Length: 490
Image (cartoon, rainbow, N blue to C red):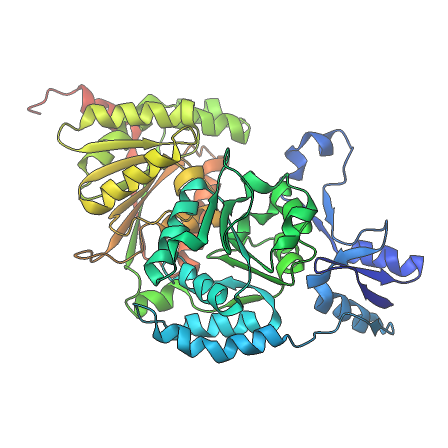
């Protein structure tokens, strides 16, 4: 095997055809939920991702260590033309680190310094660090130290303005930061560019040649095909870094990210940050809604999608979530999945239950200026309710004084669950703890366990792995209905 660099994204493996077939199989992984996809059902696709391409014998350059491991296991001789070459830019950056840190208006934590040093040592890599650990400060330090035109990619328009604001807070000149969103001019005039990936993914590869560094915040979203394609266009960019608080457990997802960016470095954990009082302690309350036996029998053989739509549109469930939200004090974030079928009816039901509190609604239809206005309003005061879609508010958005998070829609995605929890863990004046209310739909009957209940069992595993204490509270929908029919004085 001879390893030949193509650019900073790809390398070619020159080898016999039988070795290429082995590589093709070795770097192949099953896609979760492939059996539900039309291409798989029609047998147009095997349901696997192949990271080694038989055509051209190409593989991501970031998987160099994995390729060498493959060869060592089989005792295949390797000629490697993709060595790690020390970068003089990186050496200069290490010498400047202390001077940059001294000028900051806040204290830099030890793990943040460690993260910066780990990234600069390899020119590339992924920082795995939970919400509230100060990822934007680490990004700022790397940007200042490398002193190159830098492209910072974020997933949402709200995070474009939030990242730019963070940079100016740390002392960066606002005139040197350019924001790109849909509809704005993409001509680059500033040394630091913050953009959503959706705004630039269709730009040609030549567009990215003007950058020396690319940084992707919330890099776990890079499994999206459009974002992966964008990063593949950045072949001339040597310095590439990803940041996230959560990674998917699937091996394919992790290896795609390693291939595009490099090795994953975990610098701290949520538990450590809580122990060091950098994050707010969390208490999880799982509210188990027990459905009538007749409904359990009716939904027993339903497909997952049909079951989810059934529960989120259930009038009694909607009433329970709305009333509990209205009774929850402080700033509350209620997360839902379906805008028309669930989000808007839930927003209306909550508004009907409150008279002296502000209730805000955020979905993909909400203008970025309105989202930022709502965020600033909630930060500046107390006792607000935000009803928001997972897509807009489960990742990245920074509202430190959130007191309670409510999962109104079922989910099993590790990334979505843990990223959403991160919204409530930030410190704020007077905030002593955070609370998560997780609604569980129990439609079990006999030996049959419904889809959303199994997903709740998976969420319990996430809570245990992160050391979040949780309690279970069971409520019968039939009992709730009878209570609502009683006279008010009863």
